[in-house]
Length: 458
Image 1 (cartoon, helix red, strand yellow):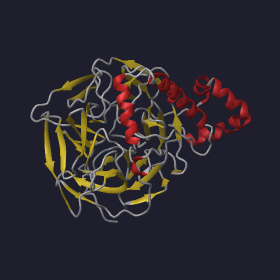
Image 2 (cartoon, helix red, strand yellow):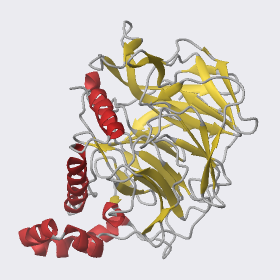
Image 3 (cartoon, one colour):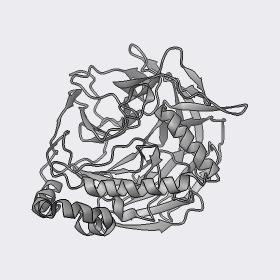
Image 4 (spheres, helix red, strand yellow):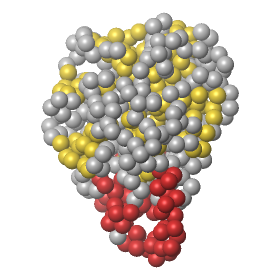
């Protein structure tokens, strides 16, 4: 069975609230948390659960990864963090896992549903509970505490974008319980922590899945994905054309289709890719995803065993000129889809996803680093500045300090964790001490546009 077929099967079961799925889902969540706890015993970079469809948020010197779909197509509430204040190799990223802290509170979500607080002190997450109830919650990054919030108006599971004031927008993607494919835009108010559904004002917009969303000023650029067209008995999926970019204006509340051209060839239509905003503040860099075969530009929703091509290419859209270009990238990386990416300085950090050709579910926990100045894939992460003494604690130092205790426990410790994993993990897990909360526009990896033209040569 293809991974996409498993996704749609799971989605259909969630909408029908299948009683058969519920115990399986709960068991999968518990197994996922247990696996996270046991995997933390590895000393050379903490192991995290391989998954796809997760969300990534960069706050100060840390990348927070939340949710996604694990093996068996189970939606998760996995929470992990990657430290960018230390030097590390892509073979052993310094992950720390906080999944166990969200037991019974943290929503299950994939393909979106995560935004940061404006001061970087918290994550806001929405999705569904193990009983399919809509759930909205806040994770305090400093105190490491979850809190449920009002969920009267919660968006679908969709990638959100946000501005420097903490206001966020979400649109499209997968419905939650008692919701349908909805083309409304939801806006988040960071003052009263509420969501509001905005009505369309100027043109009908078809529902879309597996796209990327990037905000530049007051405009949100939606690239790629598959368009859901209603047909008798279901939906028909049509690959979005890369020569037409859907744009939503958050000030005028209007949609437009903007035509794009290309320096040479257009990038392939794709979905489940990633996108970041370049340092120039106007260029969007996309990577990977899956693309249709020439004869597969449209496929029936009901027939999901179609063949797709896995991608590892890079393309750049200049949103001022609306011209696509392809940089000459050197080095090698694994083609993947359903991954996440954030920009940290001059690096595009690519994480997780599936590496299976023809849409098969071969999940990975791998990390790749693309230097977007020299346009080469590199294997070592070097922080832009040394961490301040006393301001934060290195994950590697924490791991080394616990190796002796972990080794002394041996097999008995593993058995004990298996029986009482939540208590043991909560008491003995490595603890990050983040620096004081900062806004999105501060810190060594501040997302402040340089306004210098992006060079595609090296």
